[in-house]
Length: 426
Image 1 (cartoon, one colour):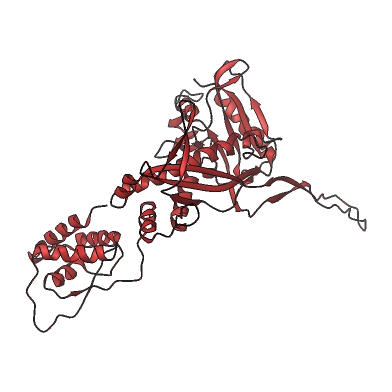
Image 2: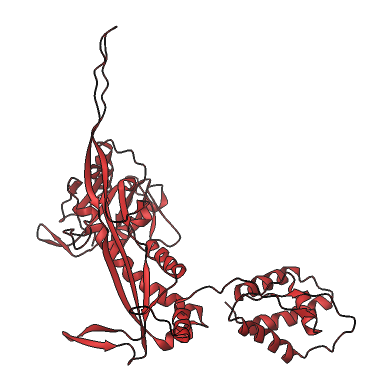
């Protein structure tokens, strides 16, 4: 986003072009949009009987900056930029602040909190709107979340019912009694969200710069989102359970396992057999898809069909613009580096795995969204050369951001998930 000074310069040039008879309506619309992004607007009052002397360019810019600074970045309303500038130059403009508040930022949290000196216990609570935006970044970085699982708000824990034995039908003779059968339900593993937390120290200088450079704010948010997303995705895929982390899809009891020979490269037929495995289980294929390592995708890009055509040239494989997802064998896929490529299978190192299943049966429980706390006086422990070192944020001019959530995952119908093991593509 450009600063106010640049927009003011363009406004001045725009007024000159308009006075020369040029059509500037398109550029005017763009400049109006930029002003709104900065939160700047004005309403034009009726001209007074006597015209005051026009303001100089320096006075004009100073007037806009003073109003902008005085509102702390909040908005004041306008419809026509050209009319506003003309009226401002002649001293006819009146500013009408609205009740709209500036968008909250992580950098603004500490600036405001320190100014007001109102810390809560252990630091400052980051506004919910910022926490929600970071949580959206987290979800966008988790491969399992990209496959469309069911996401539930879970207060404490949740049992998920499944039909163990359904209602049956029978042919009956005329006037004969119709046999009665009742569905029997079983409970799958509970959704019991476990706490997931990350601690990120940020220099106060970076926070200060982030107030005027939006890119720095994005860096801070992305760093927090990456930390939470990486750990959550790893747990969703291959967590060991046991009460310390969720039980990952790969380790759920009852899923189908297709073991390949790791001493030979897989074939396209091997992947088709994985799909056939779910068909044989009467899978409805509501949200079917693959999750694999990017190396597997790179290998698939080099493969050809029975006619010698590359898979990418046909309908078997297609990529999105980013090249990290697309469709394979007609089903959506997502890649993630959270799947390891250094597994040893039957004494063969360098193996990986892929998952294929109906992700409509994957349930993710979230207890409280994402909570962000900040403190510039807390301390943290960092391991340096095997030794735990206590670092005080106040001494090192840092602010600590703590991201905390609680999540869990379960597979309601394990028979509709396949783990393809022993994949050797390198």
